[in-house]
Image 1 (cartoon, helix red, strand yellow):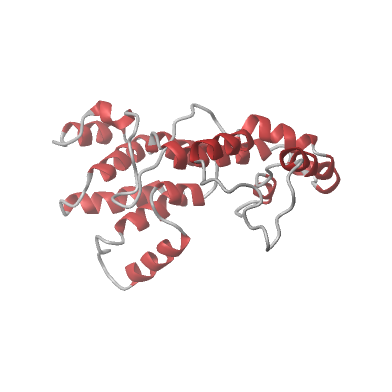
Image 2: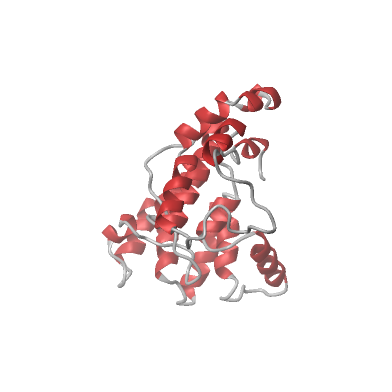
Length: 235
């Protein structure tokens, strides 16, 4: 949890909906552990069911219309709530289908202050980042192994100058990979250094301009492929 409103975005359904979904099904006991079903897990059906709970537009309506939520949830937290439901939906669909990593990164960086989604899409997390930062303190030049986590951490802080510094140092060492080029080009543009972005793309032998917004663009180095461009703002 990075903000109080995120607690509300954990909502899936209230008691009435649970009763509807489980109506007519005997309760589970230790003697009948497969009471609900003896069939193997139906992955497509499971995702179809889960998707109905994860769509932001309908989820927030169920949340606001829930009698129990109206009793316990402070109305003062309702205004920014939709953005967190959108983040939840976006991360769910990203893990489920994968898509444009740069577009998802842009969504989080420009329209939220959340750290965790930025780290996740880059294949990192707070624990990895903490280890990387500890190792970096003991070396003048960060080791290549921890550089992806340091870049993810700088992006999560919205410290674009530090992202540029880290990736430019990799570029000088000839260690810049394709995903690094995507990120550096993007961050140059965020920082208003459009000419640098153009020169970077023009001077890169294994990157084409159209690759920067191609569906399926993955981020996170070799650890993770993720992304989603759902075309919506969460501001």
